[in-house]
Image (tube, rainbow, N blue to C red; front, side, top):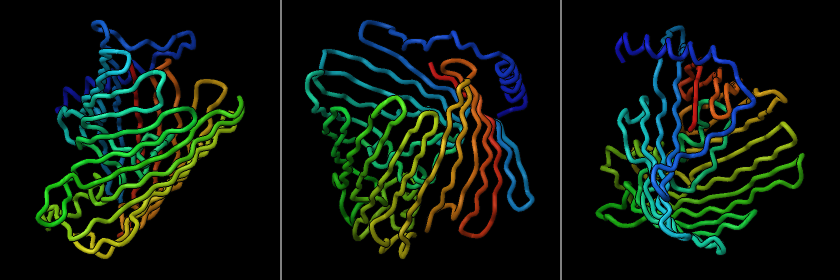
Length: 333
């Protein structure tokens, strides 16, 4: 990003932060461009400070630009698509999701076919930064066939996909992803969410694919993975916990002899005024950070616009320590 672009971005950020929040603003409905087609989006801008063992750096990036489309052809047939740009990710506009969904209103059964994020892990967070469970377990950019059941409070599904990590000499639809969960409100003061998921080939997650380049993304045998999570809300408080892990040690590839696992614990609070607070304690074994903790404070500038400040401390498995401060301006539409 050149100096002029950075200056313009900083100026825009300063102007937006100076705008007072208005509780009278209503959530804007997704725009219907033509009959049956709706559009939504998300823009996130982040300024960050990074310090590791006395060496520091700063950055300003467009962390997320997301554009979503939903087209309903009949009362049971629809198409969904999401375009995504992440400056600190692929650094290009990609098709993040694109799938066809079939579900009748009166039926709890649904089917989806196309590219979608797999239903492995929950990854709920009140922080700016992604939880370690997401970094380890998220699986995206695969065409899949998924069938499931949706009827409050229960959701369950099973999907198959052709993963990038294959058994030696094979190129098959090779991965199964299954999930089950329940969520609801018991009364005005208590809400809950809990669930579990399974993947037959955890080596194919985004966080672990880098373990296979030396073997050409091939393995002698797949290692399964699982995730369990729980969420409990008490008035303005919400507690979140998740654990995600490989079921056994990898036998080959660069991860041979390791059993990656991660956990994330958070407590969040919504103040009576438009402000939110979250605390995190997290960690991992054989993957990324040994320990991580921090806090985020967020303020609603408007119904779908938030400014948030996060501090995060991380100790890596090589014993290096990192301190990170992030200021994020986010707006959905």
